[in-house]
Image (cartoon, rainbow, N blue to C red; front, side, top):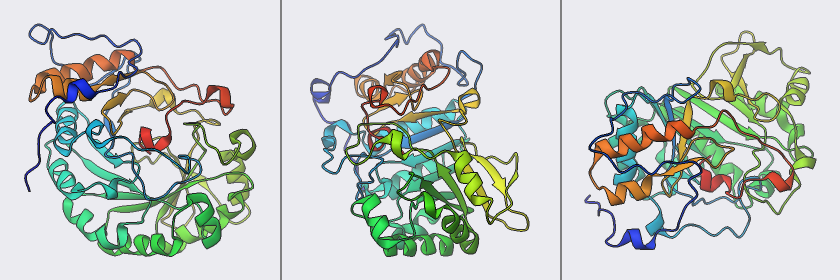
Amino acid sequence: MVFAGPPTGALTRMLAEFESLAMDNRETTTASVPQILQDRFGRHVTYLRMSVTDRCDFRCVYCMTESMRFLPRAQVLTLEELWQVAKAFTELGVTKIRLTGGEPLVRRNILWLLREIAVLPGLGELVITTNGSQLESMAQDLRTAGVKRVNISLDSLRRDRFRRLTRKGDLAQVLRGIEAALVAGFERVKLNSVILKDRNHDEVLDLVQFAVESGVDISFIEEMPLGLVDEHDRLVTYYSSDQIRQDLAQRFDLLPTTESTGGPARYYRIPGITTRVGFISPHSHNFCSSCNRVRLTAEGRLLLCLGQEHSRDLRRELRAYPGDEAHLKQCIGEAMAIKPQGHEFDLSEQSVLFRHMNMTGG
């Protein structure tokens, strides 16, 4: 398969993007290329989350609006551009890359990109987050391509409720995808559940029981206030990790552990069981002090923080300086200077960031 390079004249079609505090330094001949990525707070960036598309076959209520408008394809990074960014980051010390979306498995030729990233020198782990809709047919190919672990979104075990939360999802299809992932032999399979009060909070016991019986991990996630949603009030539906742990205590003994998968989840063990229960708690237990990650949006924005707009437009650099690896790495290194100390998430509508989660990369 031959892939086309950047489209002719693409620079003239690009939208101006917000680059708060970014220094636009073009002096690549005199500036040094960084060897590792470290921000001004001494944190080393070793983890890159790459969104390969903003498109998705679901319309989850906490992620996007029902009538979501997606990016024109010319504004989305090509597979080769995504690979160039991945290569630059691994050469700068990043050891873990996660592919996200939207739904990454709806991106055409995604297996090619996975195979190319998996063999990059220095990469310790290639993982993927998916809604599970395509796993029934793709799980084995993903494992063969070099994906080590897979995270699968699962917010409900009730068919009608699952449909309401995802607007388009088929629970049976996702459950078959989970089974296919187990058969494919990934090193680890994890479920991700976003918990909303009075929407699915009464299922946390059942979700953990399902994870235990399936032999997989599970993480509960507090809703991220990204993008205006038209289906619920985030202040009303907020359900904290502490509340979830209290609910789980009715049936399970949760023992804290220092185990980590390199992300923000804090894990607990159930005695005598392999399943780990994680909590991603941006509101109740801020995890910014140990942040080791950055995000690349599908349109090429390097986001230095999930909850802030500090960013660098790597698409512009890739297309203005094609093939210049040193320049790309210099731009990435410069961006570390604007990585903020932490997010300032607030569930009130006035403080919600405009970009939706599918635009950011889940």
